[in-house]
Image (cartoon, rainbow, N blue to C red):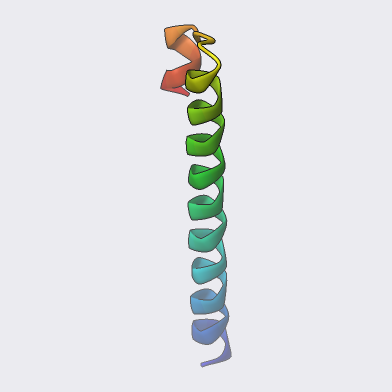
Length: 46
């Protein structure tokens, strides 16, 4: 029972973190776009 709720909390936290990271990446790319800085394709694929 405890394990289940712990798993739930953990997965929610991980989800939130990855969303946050995605937002930061989007912001970064928007910033770069607005400054007309081009990125190597390989970096975008990461």
